[in-house]
Image (cartoon, rainbow, N blue to C red; front, side, top):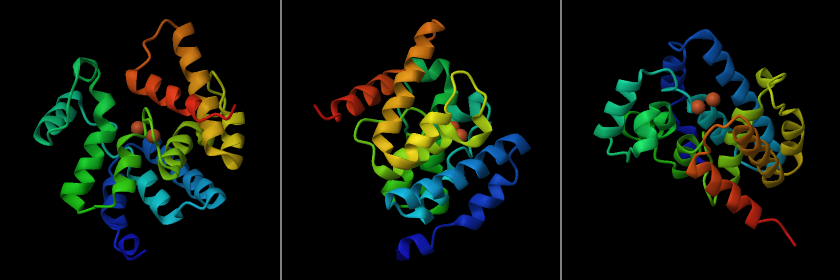
Length: 196
Ligand SMILES: [Fe+2]
Ligand SMILES: [Fe+2]
């Protein structure tokens, strides 16, 4: 708990204040949703709040900046990420938090790093941040809808994750859009956790 008390909320909020209004509002809604979900599932709400507030700090950085940061932070950039640098914003943010703000809580860093695609073996904190990001109330009315996923997340994180990923992948395929390997791997993992 001591580590949580020293989390650099002020520095994160300062950088958050420089983001465009709509993104800042998204982040605030994600943080509220993440804290509520954390309380439903016995996850540390301070860690959830911090990870949610930080998760998109590099979301609107130009592609060249993201790729430069990834290289200087020694974050692997595959061909897919080279073409779509936005995909590294979570990893760059996590590494920035570690290097620049001295955040060493592995659970928080991982929740930030994997908030876009998830990963096999996600922790409850990672699922909380992931689901809060995908289902925050500002996304109401999106197609496909996520209201039932949001409701499901209050009761069972893995069930909600499965519901989200199955619908997300189905939607991408229907649109002829590529499914990232990390997303497929996360879906396969969460399916494998289903009981008989
Ligand atoms: Fe993001
Ligand atoms: Fe986000």
